[in-house]
Length: 69
Image (tube, rainbow, N blue to C red):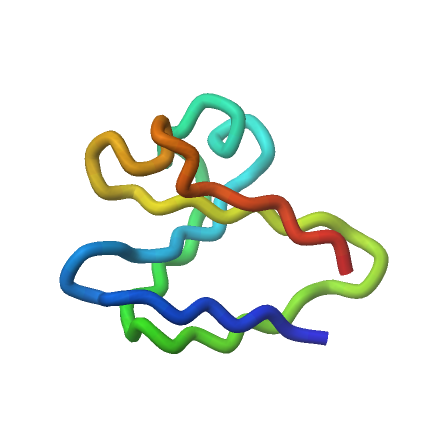
């Protein structure tokens, strides 16, 4: 299973973070950043994946999502 994120790469990004960083809208631990604007991300079956936009203020304004595979 995979998730697809489509967005304007000059205005946003997608960062896969841990649950703590998701909750606090920060990137402090291990993460992976996607910047293509058309990202296909493989998801682990039976788990949750946490994604945020790391541009200033975006996550705090709600640009974040939890995906359950």
